[in-house]
Image (cartoon, rainbow, N blue to C red; front, side):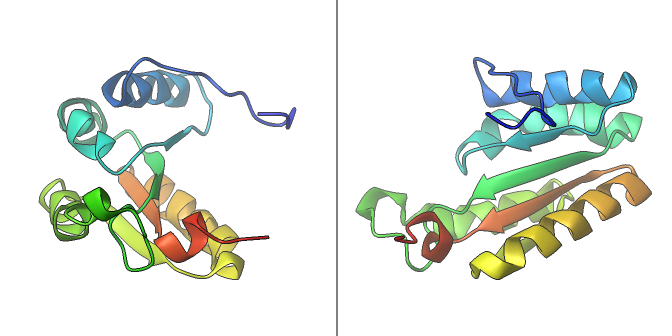
Length: 133
């Protein structure tokens, strides 16, 4: 949020965030959405009606709650739902579990989203989310 090369827009829910990003793309920007794991479900409708039907790319960065390394007990079920939901929505994704792989993964996902005119996601595992230091 302190980087002047980015414009951060806070929204009230994930679906609205997807809509704001679609508008940003149509205005010539390269949007990305930081979306919680559970928020993928809230964003399913705009992802399908805006991004997928209208060929609007979107980079999604998702803290992969419930992945191995996530020490919060009630997040465990997301391990079994996140990837199937993304597959059902036809969102290409990659799972990143090493900090030095984040930038290349985000770069590849952005390039793919733009080339395919579809959403692409980068899932950051618990090993990254809970990294100390």
